[in-house]
Image (cartoon, rainbow, N blue to C red; front, side, top):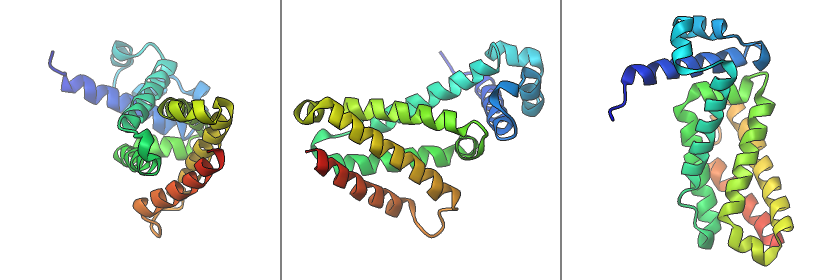
Length: 189
């Protein structure tokens, strides 16, 4: 079945409007009317695609999870440092492709909620990707290390992205994070 470009464009306008509004007010105060007005659509058009504002947030979260899964799709347990670097580069590229989401994550009043969900998804994917190693080193120990790594990566990314990134290229940032992650991985081996 062919993808209707009008539907894609409308849904993108709705999600972008939602993310922009989330930078201005709490999630629970964003109404369908607010979203429709910002997206320059009718409320009836909104309801063709979503049940309510929470439905929009849920779709954004699904999109985030899918993007993370896609970035982890070629994770190689035998070459963890290279895999970490590649995952980070892919994630940064995804965020750069969607400035509305990046700004939503960095500057919305509910960014803590979003980053907590991203951390949870990344931790689950990393645990899945390193399941063989987890069995050898002890699952709880590996999970604690992965939680530490994921939280550090996300929080450091937010600080780096918020600082304008001009003095530190994405490749350098990912290289530094990879080296730091390798050090943590060595501790749990």
